[in-house]
Length: 162
Image (cartoon, rainbow, N blue to C red; front, top):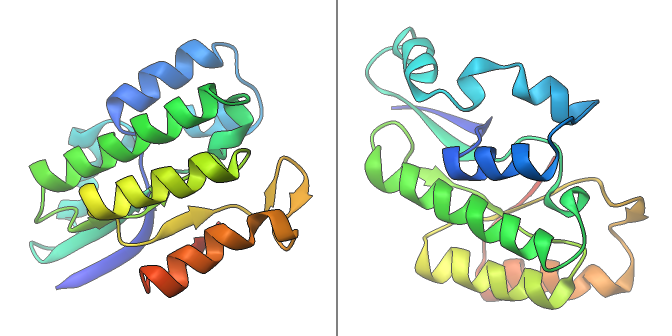
């Protein structure tokens, strides 16, 4: 099997909600929306087929980070929608997408811990994705330690840094 990791995709329900939350997005919001295979599964599968029948992808959300969509409860809603959508893709297309990486609402540590537990235990996420900062705040602030500690010590799963 050729396993390609860290492939970005928007689950359809998440994508539709994102367009409502940020209808006239600019910068990264606009750039990612202009990539057809980031949401169109037929386009993605045509590309994947070029690499042979044993090619599969570990999927995760692209930029922008969940927390830029807004404060809680919007960020927590978006994380749950993303993770539910990723799990649905993995369940529906296990040969194409054998695993996904969970997204967290990093602007709410308590909600991030809850979402991590849900995404890993219930949905089967194989790690968490974080970005290089949280709305401009560095990841090494003590407030974020519980997120990293739980992922590594409790679940023994990787943290995917975008």
